[in-house]
Length: 128
Length: 108
Image 1 (cartoon, rainbow over the protein chains, first blue to last red):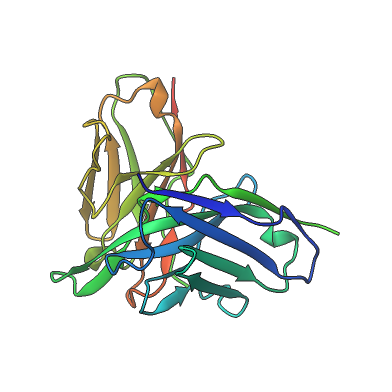
Image 2 (image 1 turned 90 degrees about the horizontal axis):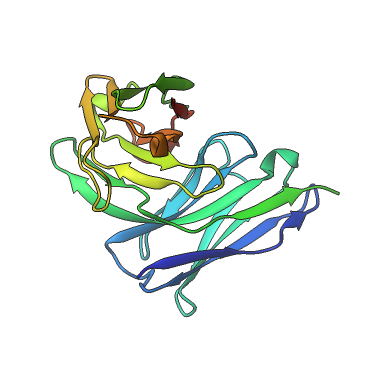
């Protein structure tokens, strides 16, 4: 059974870099069938897609955060990571990692991916 | 930037049908996905590719899409269906993905 687990500091100072890791068990992040992604949810607010990648392919980022967000992968540990630079209080949120099945719609002419398995989430607070 | 618009709240009595809408300019040519999130929990996929239901999701959950609007319908809503529901899709470039603002479903 596939499981994802987020880990990292729960408290980050303003202007510093937030770093989180997602450890995947029960499946390989090297699979070409899946994307892997990060999503966050500020307290009392909605979900926000941060970015997604598939191994050996492209990485896509939320354009509103693109300059501050980096996603990387470590296949030897079956992990992928998120970095958000120059954080402010607005980056305080629950951060989720997720597996994203992918496919191609010949009818609509595009590649799609969506989250089907989520980690439990980890809370990150930005405060001095 | 691309946006998906949902009503902030929907309220129904137990056993009634609950309909939650999601509007977006790219939806005529992009799939919609629906997630259920109960308080303090991670989201759960309830509908994918407009109309498909993952295994383990009750049959009372269904999806449809027409033009610029996708709809999640819960036929015979139950008290346990109370949750926040989010639609999810991509823009015309298919490189940037967004969630709708979320709809709080109340069943009482």
